[in-house]
Every structure is written in structure tokens, then in C-alpha cells.
Length: 514
Image (cartoon, rainbow, N blue to C red; front, side, top):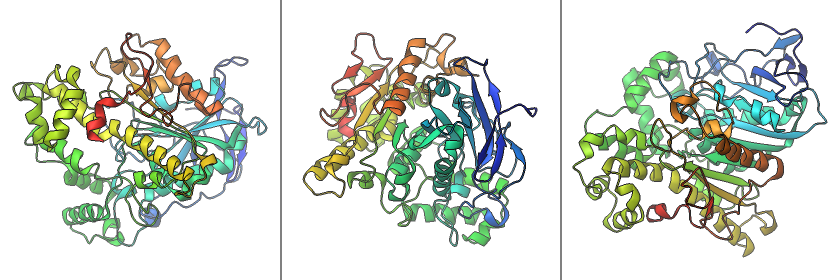
């Protein structure tokens, strides 16, 4: 993009940055973008496996009119969300979108978005994450990057653990120190993300060391990792063996980033046999790369931390789409058509009693065939039961606080709101993974939205989802009853017209798995 000499200039801790304007002056659509601002030095050379280091100050005005380098260096192919790959080394950067650059007294609420991608992919430069709609509605928006895959999350002897988690913390520290320059309020920061980004939100919510960095949280389709230390060490040894190096910092540093990525893909891939084997591994073991319970930065699994009252004073909204993974099992429909759903779930090692209860609670889905049933089951295990477990963990923390059994004061307990995104894609059949994101960002006219949302995605649905997010960030309430007084209370976005918008037990169908 060409430089914009008349673009807005703001002063941050490292120097001056110049952005560019979008939209007509004097309209609600007028806002500025500041792209690719470094929050840490490039994680290359001696810093490749190091904790993030603050950026070097610069003199003069630095142009912030192009997206910074992305940690994802490889063409992702046909992904549900557009995920541009930007070459370069300075991959630790932020993008800021604001209608009031330089107006420190504005102190608008702030959204910090953490992208998804299974902790191994994704891009903060996605056009879907542009904050212009939030700017229009009075919210400053920031998207942050972080190291991916083994470079960001792998266990490496002699290197800091959870380097990508440390990137999240460094990005949030940057926001705390600099967001006033963009018209934002550092005391009203909402962290939000989808998929791995939603998992990042819950991880941060359960981290004592992160509590001062945000005020509230929104977790969409959260994919929690909480990788066990021994599993992390096993993957490290396997990767080192493939690379022919010692499983140490010096050993892995001798392997190029491109080669390490290729070996990482090989180490994580299955044998290509029974289609249920890969599903079973994911359901039983979880994601192989992601935040590790290292006993240092992450002292315990996230649910344990939330149950103990960490983050209890932070308002939380969380939910999932109804069929995150069913599009994947659709591809095995022919192979599964003659296999009873009960037998398929037994192969996935779901015990008889919960299997019967689960099938009884999902009769409508079962009628759609075994592939549909397995897709819903995978969705429930990975995403939807997390909603219930997190909401219940926070409710337990509140109850313990009232009894004096938890450190959080009862007066500090914040609400938890649950939702479901139930509108089925007209092109992909299901309320699938990522379908809710363009509705959250109100970017229905964005590139490739039509691929998963059709040519005429419902405007009212975007108004509802985006409006709830804005209400939550601005007023602290998304607009429906919270979970604690009546567990199960769930806002349904885009469901069957015969069903109420708020259900008394919107996640009853996953109860057998919780």
C-alpha cells in the first residue's frame, strides 16, 4: 500500500506511527487503521526460541500502512477464514483500528482479538478481523499476532516454555501501555478470540499473571489445549528424532523454520487409515500443540484454575456453533452410512451408559445419519461441552467464594453468559466452524464470506451477534440472562424460528458428556 502523508500520526512508547483513514469524513464509517506495529523484536536468530523482547525505539515517523509479517509462512490453501500470509521476520506485531486516533481523552472500550488456527496456523491480517464495524459502534479494535506451532508452543529444553503465551502477554502489555494514544481505555479491554483464539482467551482468563491486562472476555468456539508436560516432551523427542538433532534449544535452532514446519506436519499426521482413528486421537488426547501446563507460566489446567476462582471477577461470554466439525465427517458419509451411530460411538470409546444417554438427547441429529451424529459428537467433545464446563467451574467458584472456601470475594464475582450459534450455512449445510466470525465482526460484505454464508447472509443475525458483542464491551452486558442463577440459560443466535431466542437449558444435549 502506498504511504499516506496525510494519515493520522500518534505517539506510542517506541516512537511515532502513521496510519491511514478509511470511510468518508464526517460519517460513522470514518476510521483509521494502523497496521504492523511491532510489540516485540523479530523472533529470529538468538531470539527465535526466546521470550518476546520489547521493540527497539525508532526516530521519525514510522509508517503503519501495511500488515506486518505473519508467523504463518505457508500458503494455507482453501481455509474457511481468509488467512493472508505476509513474508518477513518481524512477526510479533499488532494492528489497531480506531475512529479517534490521538484522542486520549476519548477512552473508548477496547477489543483485543486473538486469531484461531489450531495453534499452528491463522493470520491476524485476515480482512474479517478489520475493526471498522466496531469502530463505527464506539469500540477501538486491536488484532495481535503470536508464534505458531512448535516455534511458539513446543517443549524445548533450555528455552522458555509457552513462548506464544508469552507473546499474548507481551501484546496485551503493549495495549495497556499504548492504547490511550488511539483513543482507547486500558481499563476497559475485552479479550476475544475464536477456536484456538477462544482457547487463548480462556487460558489467559485462568492465568493469575494476566489478570491486570484485561477487564472482560469473549470466547467463541474455544479450543482449549492444556497440553500435559509428558505429551509435550514426547512430541519434542519425536520431532528431534525426525530432524536428527538433540531435543534442545541448540538442536532445534540448527533446523530451519521451513524444515521444522515440514517435520512438524509429519510428526502430527496420522497414518491415513480408518477415518475414525484421527477423530479418536483428537477426542481422547486433545490438540497436540498449544499452551502447555508447564508448572511455571501455567501452573494447572485452565478448568482447575477457573474453579479455584482465578478470573472470577472478569465478565465472560462464551459459546459455540452447533456443528463445528460436521462438515468434516460429511466427507465420510458413504463409509459410515451402514454403521449404526451407537457402534461408531462405541468405537470412539464412549462408554455404554453415557452413550445411551447422549444418543437419547440427540435424537434429531441421529436421524440425519451416522456422519452427522459423529460430527455433532466431535463438536460437543471439543467445543460445546467446554462451554458447560467453564460456566459450571465459574459458578462453583462463586459458590465457594460465598462460603469463604475460595480466595475470590463474593462481591467480586462476575457473570458468565452462554450462547449458541445455530444458523445453518446455506452452502455448507451446517452451523459450522468459523461461520459466526463474519457476524461477530459485522463484515458480511467481506471477501469470501459468501463461500460459507451464502450470497445473502441475514442482516438481522449480524445485528444481533455484533450488537451483543458491542453491548458487552461498552456496557458489560450482552443482553440476555446470565448462567449462574439458572444454569443452562443460553442465547440462541439464528436458531429455528419456532424456538425462543433464550433457552432455559440450551446445552442439555451435551449433559451426558460433561
